[in-house]
Image 1 (cartoon, rainbow, N blue to C red):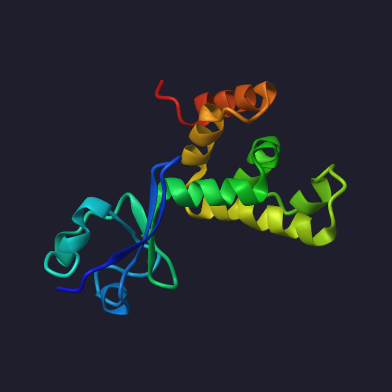
Image 2 (cartoon, one colour):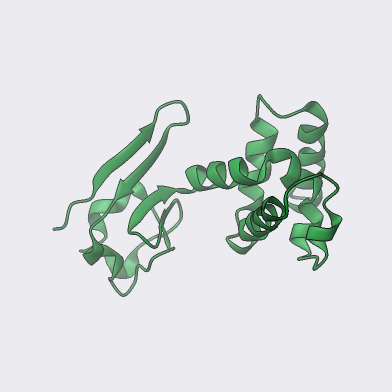
Length: 158
């Protein structure tokens, strides 16, 4: 059995990043970018056909990251305020998103923020991103309120 090892533990956020050997990432049923369950990590090789891939992500370098960690990093890059302010433009893949940014950012920053905003939706992490903003102790009250409204509009069970 191939053994993964812990790379990083963020105790404040209770997040975990695990490096796994290349052999695990090349298994047929688990591909780079798939979500896997950390608690089942030692079952990857022996039980790969029935693997439940939900909570963590194998990235292109063979790292396993949990979903919360990935959402946290993406939100840090785009900024909670930007993500919430332009949420619906990202959701609708508005082709004018960069032109619509009202902030006085450098052109590279605009492109990065647009790319990350779209990436959150491409990876279907928008619900988790909204939850993280809602739970934030740092975000402005108006941003948290807007995040709650967006969450209720798109993800609340009616």
